[in-house]
Image (cartoon, rainbow, N blue to C red; front, side, top):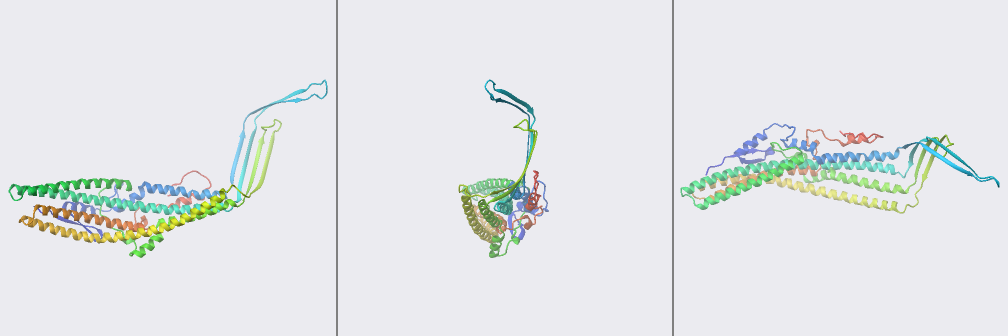
Length: 487
């Protein structure tokens, strides 16, 4: 049997994948390709993350949701501002009134008179209302809205981390499945050559029909693995397109991001509980619920307001004899709630229960983040060790296959032994590809768990989205319906 040539492709951070020579040449060209981002293609993991950061619809949707929550602050601040209403009435009116005067003495009949006319009454008026005190509800609603804004920003960070992690995972999945597909195709080529040589040896009487059948069976199994690898590659390409927003190009090798994560597990846990945006979101949600209790309690306090109004009438809708009238007033109003059916007390109790729930959610978030950090750390350690193990497995499988082939030439090994060794080597190479995939994905997972997966930390060449810009654009806006872009 002809020996297949073996090439090696050096990966970043010292890890290596063992490939067939044709695969090695293709991936070597990909690795040495200069860093460049095409308008509609992503050739490196960094450029894929940039595309996802800009194009992912889930992330853009969360940005829009954050901008919508920003509007809660000017809505709450409107309670400090006056409310002005202007009214106007105009029209045409016809009036006719008939009056009866009773007789003043016997022999004098009753008299009737009719008053009829036509006029065009008009009225213009205005009202200005200013709330002076409402149980601090406006102040508490403003603080509640500001806490909601901060919670929305933390939620946006959660979404950013989720999208970037999904993008890195999709990229590595496609890279892994592409490598496995190449491995399986090269394996089929080797098995085809093995079958040809086995048939030649069968024709000269060196092997039996059983050897030929074993070679045919291995080839059929190899072709089945190619079909499975093609299906996996197609599914990964579709996921890549969904997450990153563009069709995949020719992918380059990627490196782990361990340098951005803490160097020990206690440090990772401390960093995660301090910086993970899921915990930050839960903390701000507690503040929102606390202000909600104060807003509900404000319904029990009196309300003080002042109202100024004026009305100018031209002609009258009630009397044809009135030509002009003017009214103006400035009135103070004090409203003291005594009993409103008990709904306000129920709202207070409800708000307190919600506050208790949010505090429990904060504890849950902390426990969840800690578990995620520990799990990610364990997976990263296992992935590092697995690379060394699978590299040794590949090297041993190569030596074993070469030895078994030589032994088969002199009749000390069967065709089945050669086929088994060939499949063992292929499985070892697939395991190494998977281990290197897991190594990179685990490093991104750990960085996400500690709250550090962001464009700033990764150093991505992309303008970062700053939600504070939109907040300041709308916070003190008194009027206007134009929507700022927030950038």
